[in-house]
Image (cartoon, rainbow, N blue to C red; front, side, top):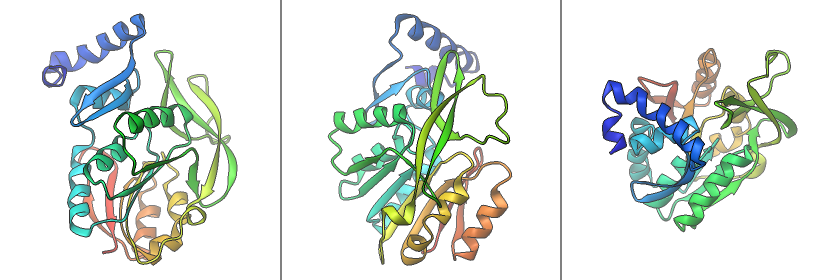
Length: 256
């Protein structure tokens, strides 16, 4: 019912605001929500989770294109890099039982939500990793925005040079690892989703061997100001763009 009402301008503004106040008051903001065939553990106070709860779907245009690619190329693995609550991992894990899914998320709170969803839906084809992927192995600090006294589970690498005012952020420790050190595939069909909040070129560089040794389709959110460097990297490595979102900085590239 909520996802129908929210289409009306008045309710579109009212429902999220009222929902956050009421659920925070009664401490019922976290729980399992029926999304399609899945029972996903989500938090209404988190902006990404809230979109999924209200609309019963998330980034539908991107999902549709990836699903078409999945049926066309029969991918062996799906790498969900920056999985957050795990909507993509659970969506594809439920629909493609033979697909092996590797979900990478450095934010422990986000990964706990995904872990609950995986167990609840008995998704045996999803493996979880609690670290970020980059072109170097090191300890880092990450930040999550705090709004309405709630720390979002969507996180990004802390930059000590540009991140000067941190009063509205939660800072936590994480580690980065090199993608090519984690997996070493050859002659496979790989599907990637990369959502790493400005760190995308580093994540891609860390997978250079796998990108050149396999056939890949990659959904990647490219942060503002980073398009040229990422796009040039993709073209240099023989990837072509096949999709651009009309409402987000999301692009899909392939080397098939």
